[in-house]
Length: 259
Image 1 (spheres, helix red, strand yellow):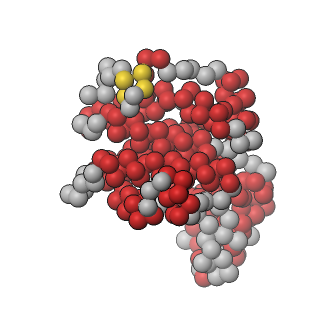
Image 2: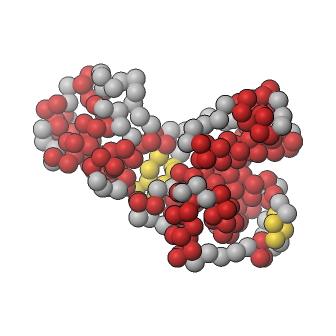
């Protein structure tokens, strides 16, 4: 169904642009400065990535246009959240995001309750507009602001977004670096237990004394201060992938000490 399809969502896939590495870096610098035209060009220059991902779902029997549209949502999210300082390829970061969006879409569509195409289209347009306005204003827009910008009612926006919502697993992969996968749970701050963390409740201070200075610092920031791995990486001055590896090693050492 997908294989051999030339036009998807009105896009001629045989004529998709291919950006060189130098162009990508230059465009991303402009994107970080709020250049809308550069952002659009970067999206168009990475549509081949979406196309390659949706081919993996050819056996799903879903409409290729739908999969491509959902994949584009994942691509846009990846562009808006990508941190070029991580020193990894954009495609390495984007592919899990695109796959995640498509898998959530397929899970949602497997439900006995089917959502109409028009409501889905509205929801995806709202998501795209919300992401764009958040990027431009450094703050997420209200439902009323979105409704005014899209010339629809707030009730239509709420209904559309509620219709496509599906629960996300804390173990949903969002980035992988040669076998070290980062999951949704790795990006969540522990606000509720900022003062009384599970580390304190289990009296693991002695176990922490057997860690290296770097591991001790990471565990403290992650579980005592409720920092995300990205925040810890910025504070410590290493990559998020390195934080993930050190955190896992530290927790393994602590468990070994206590058993």
